[in-house]
Length: 435
Image 1 (spheres, rainbow, N blue to C red):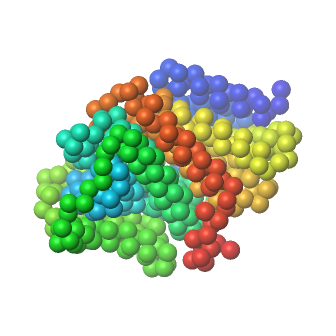
Image 2 (cartoon, rainbow, N blue to C red; image 1 turned 180 degrees about the vertical axis):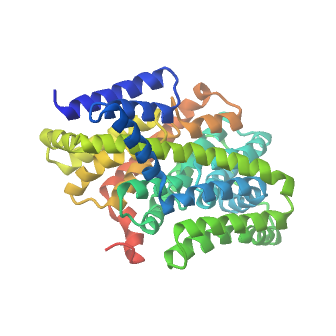
């Protein structure tokens, strides 16, 4: 039997078995990859190479941005920044049907643009605004669906930890270009959710509000300006070349820490808990990257990406059909696999294929992450889905049918992002980040 087939069968069959047995995904990836490596190298060589790949996979300066952005997000969640963003978001949503739901979407976009985490946005924003919506008579299932479906915008609108991981796996892909490329798709996602939420709110008779004085609005905006400046400082500094994404992440930590103490909503005694939580989240992500590096090496050695490319190209040479097949596969993969391991495993497989058709790594990266963002709100794994249900005090069964219109609009936007490259590439080209 061909080596690529043998290695592929061992990796994916054993991975499926381990996952079915409830083994953590990082351990499952490491074990299945090491078992496959035994087909290639003797036992001693396989163990040494596996250990080396874990080190090499995590030995990247750009990956240092991940723990800093995670820490910054946790500080903002505790330090009163989230509530100020929510209050500011209410100004945008008050003239639309379902003003609190519209504010939820905008707040998730703003919070995600600072923390880079969809789960953090769903927890911080949803946990704050859901009780307010309940008091105003909003249906809990509707509120939870809006919060869940809009939270992933933070994984597209920079900074994005998932895009940082992709840039590392894809090779020499500019993080700055990826960050700026995520803006239009992320904003389109948010606008799509707002339109559907508004149509549903009109049917449910959740009317717009216009009972706020100009002085109140000015106070809310001024109160939120220091928090919003973080986006300008970090992203602006990265784009202008003043500092790298990694340095920008450290600046985000310092800025959010100072701001939280100024707001007097965080104490020194809160820091150990924040540091511990951030370290735990970082360890999970970095370990995942390390063990996935073993799998990438094994697949590359066995020429699995080339064989899959030959298989797809043997079925059809149509770029449109192949991209549709990839999107369907990635949507399915996203339903049972977290974005980080999915990026690490499938980037080396799919990127060489799309490059044959002239798709740039930046465009493919946005398409890939967009697909996996949809997976975060889809059962059975969906981390944002579970978080949103928990903070919204609803079950997945109760909220699922309310999510269906939101799934539809995000998939439509996904195909627009896939087949209209300028949605991803216009801003990077405008800023001279790509040709």
